[in-house]
Length: 188
Image 1 (spheres, rainbow, N blue to C red):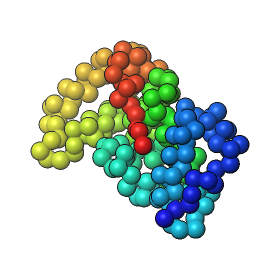
Image 2 (image 1 turned 135 degrees about the horizontal axis):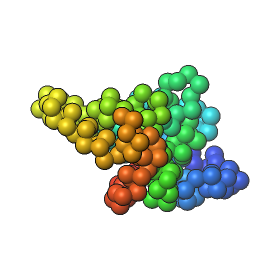
Image 3 (image 1 turned 45 degrees about the vertical axis):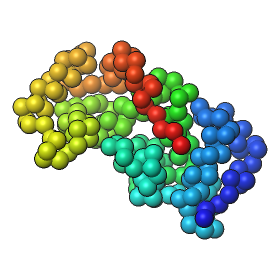
Image 4 (image 1 turned 30 degrees about the vertical axis):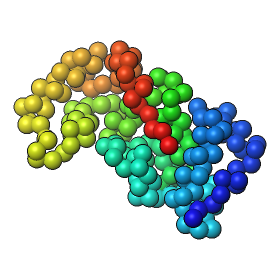
């Protein structure tokens, strides 16, 4: 199928290891998995993979935030949420067991900030809840339940009482949630 893992030089492999929370073995496995998404004769180190193909990976397929994950980690100048191999490594690094709680909470905040404005407002929180509960008529909360839940979230998280949750407020809440770090992961 795609390109082979031997395309990564030892120097580049060492550089990736220094710049990520991944081991050499994890980087090689990531390269193999990324290469499987490519067509024959495409260079894994220069080709961007469209979001639709990235989302076929079993590790992302069932994640309710899969599109947001691609959006946050994509460096595409076309803003098409495609991923380069280095974007893919950044994604796996942030979701690895070795990533720090600060890194994990930073990326979680960006993933949950659906309008990319640097805060989690009522609309972001509603979208977040719908992603977690499933946005179907059977699973969707009633407007009253949603309002109460968002009120509770803001009451607990919005330290400066401005009606939004900023990154430091989010990180403060996450720091009191010991299971966050272990659950915010993707393993190939």
